[in-house]
Image 1 (cartoon, rainbow, N blue to C red):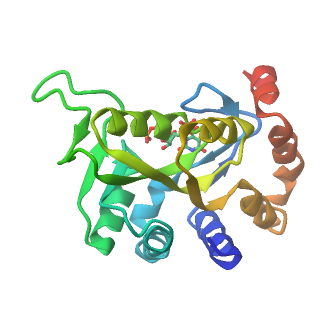
Image 2 (cartoon, rainbow, N blue to C red):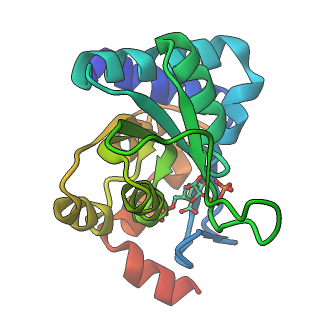
Length: 213
Ligand SMILES: O=P(O)(O)OC[C@H]1O[C@H](OP(=O)(O)OP(=O)(O)O)[C@H](O)[C@@H]1O
Ligand SMILES: O=C(O)c1cc(=O)[nH]c(=O)[nH]1
């Protein structure tokens, strides 16, 4: 992603208040970590002009970097709308991966048609530890698909996700990240008071979580 596009997406996320700061009452993340920040990319679908910017950028990133993709996958739940918008733009089939298999009906973990050997790009809304998207990608590989990349809107750039992606054998590419958000946060008088706390958290998110948990 170009610097200009990464800046633009960060700016749009702040504009729609997708980025929330609460150092005094920390958020609990999917991984169990406590954090002073929570980025709610689910809001993107409710703002058509921001949605167009984000989905166009995701589609362009995939077209440029993974032109041989056969199927677009979404992670449940927050990755699903983005997979739908992007697969429509690229005129490709779409599937999605449930966080756990249904316990009734067909008991599917993956919904949609996945033929063995197809090349899949999986779309996630956000990467913290990377655990959710990697688990979803594992399910696709177990079902016979070949995951060629994970793509997300936002990445916290944490050590945990870097380590996790070093092991999986496919790349992660994202539109924007935490550092870009901080660049904007420091210029905004409403957000700049949080800057030191956000930097403090970022130096060691695990230790911060233990202290504030
Ligand atoms: O990189 P990770 O540490 O796995 O965290 C990121 C995941 O957490 C959030 O999902 P959540 O579990 O809140 O579910 P949702 O998508 O259904 O909202 C987010 O949408 C990612 O899927
Ligand atoms: O790790 C998470 O669960 C998480 C963090 C965040 O900022 N936003 C989100 O939707 N999930």
